[in-house]
Image (tube, rainbow, N blue to C red; front, top):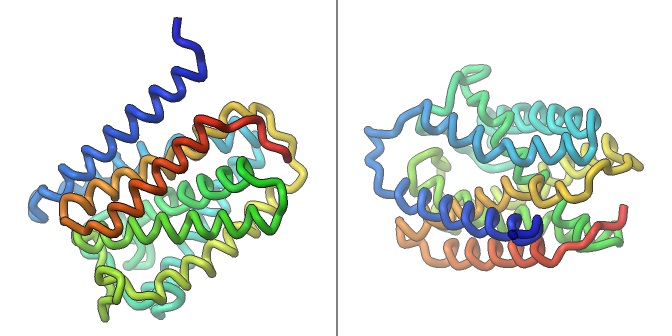
Length: 252
């Protein structure tokens, strides 16, 4: 009989390999065959574990945190598109649902925060000291974006106006992630402060969206032969998987 722990390991490995394969396939789909509804469904599927995990871990405050992060993502993304701050000037090249303010796809509300949630939960799982947690959280976000952004640009999902040194991604973009990630961290700390966790075993589910995103875009990078982002993605993904395998109940 398969234990719960072994079942979790099977699910983590199976889904990671599945989304890696989906990412490779994505890189070969012609732009004119890109289906908007398909992208929306994919975003919802990837985001769901993070939101479900936050609900099971923190209850109503977890839902409040998800909503707050979603609204913040829409605001800062809209500012970024109109002003170039903090990510550098860019625009979406493919449809991702109705565009709020004529610029920002509504799916940003659910697409960005799962990365933040995953990094937040993993940092809290691995470290007790607040400073260490924050630094690891930011490190995970930057590493994840160094995988995601090159793949998304190569796929033609969005484009930076002046290109950039990191596979057509400007270095300012990573500074922007530090800024937005720090604000998101403060939002999570304020909403979840001293909140007792209901079910610590849901930590791995809350981190699953981050893991799936990493393997998906790693697959895309391999399809476009972007080897350095792919190596970072594989390394980061394996670290997170091993961390979740060996995780114990965190100290909050």
